[in-house]
Image (cartoon, rainbow, N blue to C red; front, side, top):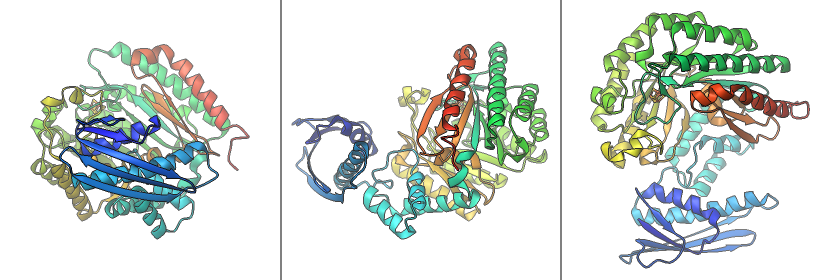
Amino acid sequence: MKISIIGLEDTRFDRPLQLIANLFFEESLILKQYDEKADISIKFSMQINEFVTVSAELISLSGKKVTAEYEKELLLGVSDKETFKQIKNAVAHVYLTVLQDFTGMIQKWGILTGVRPTKLLHRKVQEGIPKELAHQQLKDDYLITDEKINLMQQIVDRQLSVVPDLYTLQKEVSIYIGIPFCPTKCAYCTFPAYAINGRQGSVDSFLGGLHYEMKKIGQWLKDKGIRITTVYYGGGTPTSITAEEMDMLYEEMYDSFPDVEKIREITVEAGRPDTITSEKLEVLKKWKIDRISINPQSYTQETLKAIGRHHTVTETIDKFHLAREMGMNNINMDLIIGLPGEGLPEFTHSLAETEKLMPESLTVHTLSFKRASEMTQNREKYKVAERAEVEKMMELAQVWTEDHGYVPYYLYRQKNILGNLENVGYSFPNQESIYNIMIMEEQQTIIGLGCGAASKFVDPVTGKITHFANPKDPKTYNDSFEAYTEDKIKILNELFSEKGSPA
Ligand code: SF4
């Protein structure tokens, strides 16, 4: 789809124009000039005084014409960046409206293309805006549908009930620990995940680096008297390493981190059932790991094969029972909507199998085509469901979870996600993952240790976020973990200095 855009010369509009076009068309090319061969041409005009007024006229090659106009009072006395954001939103508003009218397609998330829509609602709660007004603003300013606004509200309410001090947790931090190994690499995966077989040397060096980071950061936290809210072991698959290596790692955590007994939650992703053994479960229990994740993704064997997950459906079920028998009582399971070859019947089957297990939480992802994944690079090999069917599966997940006592407690969106939908974490009340809430709502610093671990430093006073990423591949990590640890401590020192620490 060639889209000719007239009247928006500023290059800062390019990205939002492209992102919104992607919501409607598989492949779209934006031309910032008149082109008579373009499938559609959209002419914008704009007036800026104390209001921003934008109008757009869309004309298609076949002569179909739609128009839209939007006016919004400008918030004055803010930075140039903030002012432009308001103008950009007004442009996005009319652009989305003409594209919706032209295609007949409604974008349930309106003009939002970002990862964390619930943050918007949290901000309004923090500003003291009454619920009805906040909802009206989300609808008017961003064109979000009632259905999604209600979902946001449900999630925000749930999060504040699970973490009542969510808005004042800046004085604490959470820790993410990345273990970059998996038994094999899944086709949709872009995480740092290296097939573990034959890599023992690399695993040993990596763990050496990780222990070092845990010691140093743990010492820093102890020195500053900073508490840890949650710890999350992800990757990769943290249970790919041996039971003995896991044992030493958790021992390190208890030795190095401050007040481990007071940490609200420790999660270990045991995502791939083929990595779970009774010895490893024993180790998890020994160190009082509260929460694990065993991820089926699908209960259809052919699908698992097609996406490169070399484990069987039976193995997932058996390992779930094993974990239960060994006393794990907060288990999350992930499902993915829209895996290649899957439609409503397969997803219905996955939910029916889930019903037999009833994990404490169920995370329902929608497949996204991440640029670097094997699946995206060979997209023609992977046939996925149409948008309407993906939407039906999502609706089914909503109804099914509600009927079975689960409530949604976090959500996030990704680029190139099927049907422009979202990933939603559901759980039984009071079994939610606090770490997931922390990572989504960005209210506190998360320190990333290990391979590919992303740190997110949230200034305790201004809320400004700084990102910092450890190297993704084990070799680079092994060569440079000391320098990366130093850099993180430097940033932490600045953030949590006397001047920076909140009262
Ligand atoms: S198990 Fe998870 S981290 Fe490992 S390759 Fe598959 S999707 Fe990636």
